[in-house]
Length: 535
Image (tube, rainbow, N blue to C red):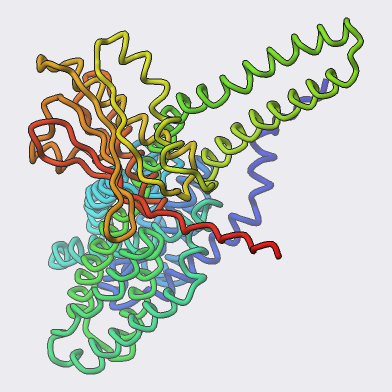
């Protein structure tokens, strides 16, 4: 038997092209970001290259340690040179690579691999680990430089501040983008964010804000820098974390290009980078909140759909009970007719079986459509027939419970509704009314259903009971999801009912009164056209 498990060496060799591409890209980014170096060391106010190394180690684990060390060492050779003190430079480069490996390991132990930093907990964890871990890396690296004589004593505190700020800005702004690009789900979300006209609009606004901030306000203390917050807040508010990541990276590159063109000092660049870091974090926090709200909305809609399934189960049982009972009766009749050899009557009975089977299948099909898409199937039905169909199952319950259930005379109008869904609404109100009067000491216990045709051509259906009624506070919140007066209730029945009524162009509300009052307002179907007169 041949094992499918690859030898670690084979797996490492298969990644050699990836590692070579990473090393080349790391050195190229390090060269491009070698701006205002302190004592010609790897201490700059902007250092995005470590973000590449962190993402590689987080994705691949220990196998990426060697490529990261090689990349950092080659950066020392290509950017800073090692002719003066080669051993000291090599040692400092290896210490720095070890620091980045330490930081990546620290992140891996605190963040799940499948996170996209799109919830507040993971974002805060990532940010705290990066800031705190970088402080440790900064102190160890600069202590090494000081120990081998590459950093003078007078440059210690300036070095700590500049290295910490440079790495923190580079990692905080660039790492989320690289992290999303390194997984399929992140790439898909980023593509959805940028592949629309609104993304072009906020990126154009970012260009305008950069021009205003640096072209008009750059020589005046960058007092207009706050304008850069506008495009990133726009992107985050509309597209969540994906929009914030794209806009933050775009603005960061724009700031660096503007700094190079204007030939600003290291002090000015450091101040701008701190502002850029604040700008990016504001965008990330806004984006995270937007993403969490969207997920909460999706979960709520899913919960409401499940609640609707439970509510419709009762209606389904009632709808199916009639055709199933008829099917059983017709099947028995078919057996008897077959024994007696009555062919014509047997054919008629089989036709009835087919009709009832089609009716049951139609009910199931409508229920499936509602679960999948929330779709409605409108049909024209008289108000009286609709109310009687919904009230009928409760008459026997009223007799058993000693509750007087009364239905008033209904206006002679028709409704254009999904009968199955609207019966769910009316039965839910009736069920609540039964619970209210059953728990109330008031006598006599009554429930009545009435309707009136209003002047605006709409029908107002009232469900009233002799229970305690709604207080002002309860009336304001009872239709909110998960608000229930029952100890065993989920608090979704009325919320689902209101959603169904809204879909039908109506309104559902409860009135403040000394007894229970709920009202459903629905549009009346247009009158059917009269058939042409026969001549």
